[in-house]
Amino acid sequence: MVETFGSGVAWIDYDNDGFLDLYFVNGAAVGRRAASPGNVLYRNDGRGRFTDVTARAAVAGGGGYGTGVAVGDFDNDGWLDLYVTNFGPNILYRNNGDGSFTDVTAEAGVAGGTEWSSSAGFFDYDRDGDLDLYVVNYVDSDAADNPYCGFKKKGYRMYCTPTMFDGVSDRLFRNDGDGTFTDVSTEAGIANPGGKGLGVTFCDVNGDGHVDIYVANDLVRNFLYRNNGDGTFRDVGYGAGVGYDLNGKPQAGMGTDCGDVNGDEAQDLFVTNFSAELNTLYVNRGDFAFEDASEAVGLGSGYWPLGFGTRLFDVDNDADLDIYVANGHVIDNVQLYQPQLTHAQRDLLYRNDGGRFADISAQAGSGLEITRVGRGLAVGDFNNDGALDVAIANLDDRPVLLQNTSSTGHWLLVEARGRRSNRFGLGAVVRVETARGVQVREINNAASYLSSNDIRLHFGLGDEERIKKLEVRWPSGVVQVLEGIEADQILKVEEP
Image (cartoon, rainbow, N blue to C red):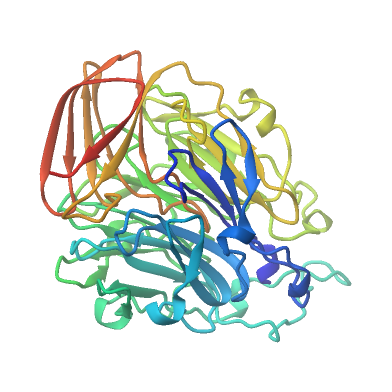
């Protein structure tokens, strides 16, 4: 079953040269791991070319069947580290700052167990200035547990559904600030054995300064963990209206992201789902109340494709968030019993038109004309031109790098440097004010499916050449204001 879920991809400037590098996680067919190519790190030379530096960096994996990846500076030394999830023990690679990494999993205490881990992400849930780690786990399964599933069409085998397996609790590791972590899953209130998680993202849903957790689950309701501000969380997903779809049914959640799609300065939630389910947009109405607006805002074309990786980002720099979804079915012979479906599928790109979305996939260029079995997706500006690009990890195929050539609008990339807060400012809320209005974004690279995005924060500015005011609310509570900022630059903001 694990081999059909694919793996993730991460943007990481591992050598601090100002250009995003790429890290791909790889698996292999179950029982043939020895033939796996291993995980791969590609260095960006800043001129549009990438070089395989995996051997030098020592990040090929080896702890299990590779699934997902998270990026963050867990020791606050200014160098981004890697956490790789596996079908088996996970791996934490510490960045040595010289082009190489060291496996510090054992001493850090973050290997987890033998469970099947999927997505993961770094965030500072207790606002103590160092990054904690959330690890999503899927189902209770092992390589020897490989039942025959062929109930869809007699004589043909298919991958089993998650209903045949028990759920597994996620893990929350608190950073102790000395290079070690403590598993606080139970005391923090996130040890829910009913979960079958695949995606995770973090955002401050109610604006209280504490980062909340959203988990996309497969065929059981999704979790929204409200941060109580005292080191504990409470699952409010059911009452908030983000656990089920509009009809009160759990969906097969895969990837997820959060962002303000309608410009009301509140963080909305988006989830990709199984074929014959709409991808779900939950619009934040305040006070932990959300509305499933998927049909109302024009996301109906996502009904038949099976969505995995996703990201809310401003693809055309017009000052609002668009939606990209990587698609691909999980059943390689699905057409035998559902002729209208295929294993390989086209991706979807939705343009935000004032809070409603238009499917512009057919007009978005050759990159979206190709059918593929897409899985992990990560968004970042690899050539620093202000237009966000897309990297996709495909199942049993080469990855895809889609360069964004569509944007004509102005832009700003914010590169945060924390002092009292964590070094890269994860969890900081940035408010940008121009003559045309206000945008609010949160620094969070943990989103999509099994993947990690550009840690810098991007704003499209449309025709605005100047920012009137930029306000940063740091995780430490410090509020910083900058005024009169020119557009079309990478702005480094250091916490005072």
